[in-house]
Amino acid sequence: MSKIAETDLILNPDGSVYHLNLLPKHISDTIIAVGDPGRVYAVSQYFDEVEFEMNKREFITHVGKYKGKRITVISTGIGPDNVEIVFTELDALTNIDLKTREPKSRKKKLKIIRIGTSGALQEDIPVGAHLVSDYAVGLDNLMSFYDLPMDDVEAGIAHDIHRKTGLPFMPYVVRGSESLRDQIAGTDMITGNTVTCPGFYAPQGRVVRLPIRFPNLLEDLNYFHKGDFWLTNFEMETSAYYAFGKLLGHEVLSANAIIANRMKTKFAKDPHKIVDGLIKKVLDRI
Image: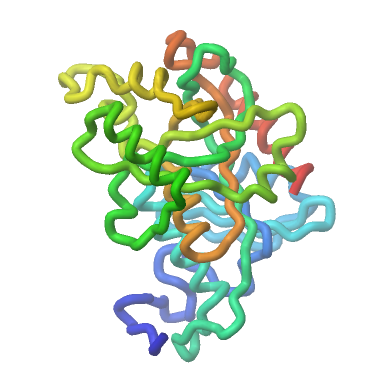
């Protein structure tokens, strides 16, 4: 690959990447990513020490140690478009020589774990549960701009969901890291398949004041299955995490705090407690 243009990978005057404002020295081998900037502090409060902090737009980063292990925790903000920025710049910090603007000959593999909130799509998944995503189903259009390969299983699920829901576009399906899933899930977390939506209201079947185009979407996702493959929950980032993990060669896992059950119309009384419990689990298992 030739030298990367200044307008394709923008750097700040100090040599840091444009949006995250980070340098390569700030990237540890293990990264925890969260949507809510405030959740960065909820993670780093458990660190033995915090060696570095950066606040830039919605992208807040803390670098520190937990039980002697160096960890970077970063907020992405909401949505797959923000995840694209974070993954592209994290990978650039790791696998591109920012001085020569050329990819490094030896690529480094990061471990990236999302800790986020999610709503259950099945009645038997209780509010308060912790769930790791095996597969992600993208109802966003981000991968229309990338060449994401899908194997036969992933492509089959994508086509069947397309037929079932009648959406005017083809979803994409991608599996997360099996090794990270086995490491993090333990015996006290549900393993499920997560739908990623490009919005919080109509794309997740919510009606407030505007009529929605797909009023049966929630029911269609709830009933969809292919053999023993069921859709368990949905949120707004996991598909982008898994797609970029696959494309860039990183190990990626999404860990979800279930704070709502959409089929039962139940919402957690104390969502922060559920998220905090998930943070502790992930920290202890990475």
